[in-house]
Length: 153
Image 1 (cartoon, rainbow, N blue to C red):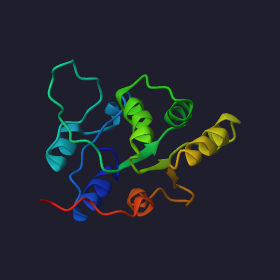
Image 2 (cartoon, rainbow, N blue to C red):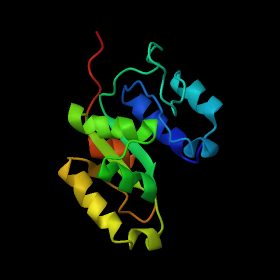
Image 3 (cartoon, one colour):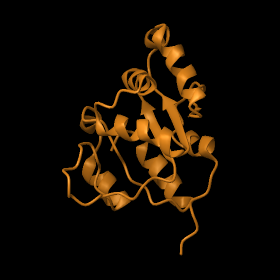
Image 4 (cartoon, one colour):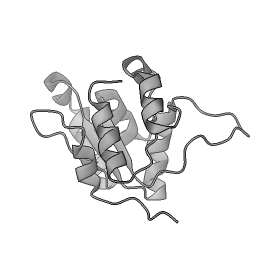
């Protein structure tokens, strides 16, 4: 598992969420898929499904994007959907799904002029942006969302 992602999954499950994980194809190299799938009970999604294939995850009630790379943030803000993860994020805006993002990038990347413009675009879309602290805190994504899962029944 990516260091710390288990803390986010556990914190969300402790709040009553049914957690599904969607990763970019490159992120899969940093994830222990078996551990994540065992913990969530769902397969990790990283590729588009074929027409007619069943949907392996329910529609999201909220989305936490963590950690979010320079590439993901800039593509998402520009409306690019060249991966399943980005496609879901682009659709989430139109569906009104509450979304929080925890950027994780270098100071040199953050200095690039595209980055603050992308953050502004995401804020305009209602995305809640965290990661301003010195230490990356996975649970901050849930704090930013500050919502409860739908009642069972």
